[in-house]
Length: 263
Image (cartoon, rainbow, N blue to C red; front, side):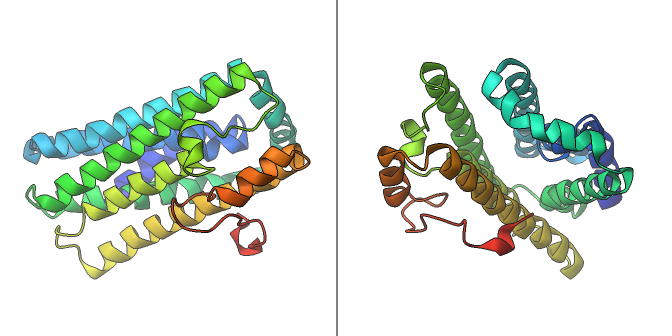
């Protein structure tokens, strides 16, 4: 199995974005990651040990949970349906050319993000500290995302009109994005001792840097939306002044002025 197979699998499972283009980045993202991890398990099953199986298994569980959670949230939560209404209308009028470009770009990104594990298996690297340390980071990121999603859903059920500042949201304003950064840092770490070639490192690092960019871009969009919804609330103003937006203990409280983060 090679990188091209990962890209093809990403194309197939992110194609749900043709239903609504925003699904290329959300539901299609989760399904593509799960499918690529499953493809790795199938393609490299003969040489996989317990650690490699656990690594891919975590990513399958992560991707399925994310994709299905987003589908359920969009179907059941009236607040999110309202947020998505403009995207639904835009998807109806978007020409096929831009949709194809988004589809291919997303599938390529997902393959690059997963490439450290693929290259590790392809190069025949044995289980070592980098794999186990990477898996630990991956698990921490996945748990943080699950906790943040649960806490936000619970808070919105109590008061859908208020911003969330409880639980993990006391640490950073975008704990789910922080979870993503931790997860993909762990994936990248698995490749450190895998004797990656120069080209393999370029692919892996490009995938990692791009997902970091996407997370900060998402944090910027969320900040602008929350400013519009809650900007007149003194409690919200105090919250954004004192709680970092995405990186804990780093005094970065706003990214809305960084227009280069538009994606």
